[in-house]
Length: 293
Ligand code: ASP
Picture 1 (tube, rainbow, N blue to C red):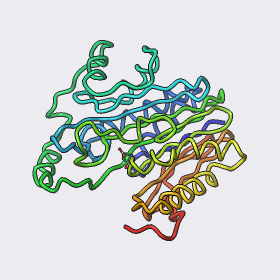
Picture 2 (tube, protein in one colour):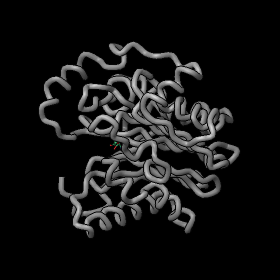
Picture 3 (tube, rainbow, N blue to C red):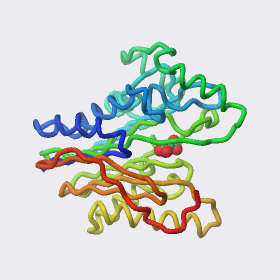
């Protein structure tokens, strides 16, 4: 059995690409990475890769991460400018270094050293994104953020994740969200499951959302049950501390190929496909009834 799931309807192209590879016996990480790359390249997705949100200095500084749940190896790159595919730089961090995360100029220097080609800034930052930034930059407030988080199970039983985001709109330069942080933005454990998060990274990190979702699957919950339960409990834990809870969502994949997703807000949907089932988008009802927009 192979299976794949990813955050938001825009990930349908990722899921279709991943499904193509998984159905031919491909490795879960290759499938997830190739799918995420398509979304990184698509300028119509305003929160990932090319065409993504800029930071307060008008820079496109991207975050990406991967994890192989069969080896617990992980790699991440954060605040990377000039490159189109942070997810692949993250994979190179995993495969070519003895570390888990590289950030900023050092991550860019690493990317250059291992042979990634720099992209033209005018290709990465589209005129529409530049114009929107110029119109909004005086606001100095974060509005708009999303992530592609993709989890895949291959026919050999490997469960892997790949994630990519431009981070929150108008974030401080140097701000790192949950997406490249193991256990927060993603977690994978073959034989158990995987989870990937999207939403305001600061809240997701406070609750270690993805690791907790995988622990729920380890305790016997299905992907759908784990997704709903982790969102409800993270939301109420933040509320109980008096925090103003922002949007959070998660997709989960369990070892039997089941997929699910949940959010604390309205309008969340995810894309999924599995052996014998074509790619589709699934809309979910909020897992809590007290989210304030
Ligand atoms: N989690 C991402 C971040 O905070 C953004 C998102 O997924 O909405 O950087």
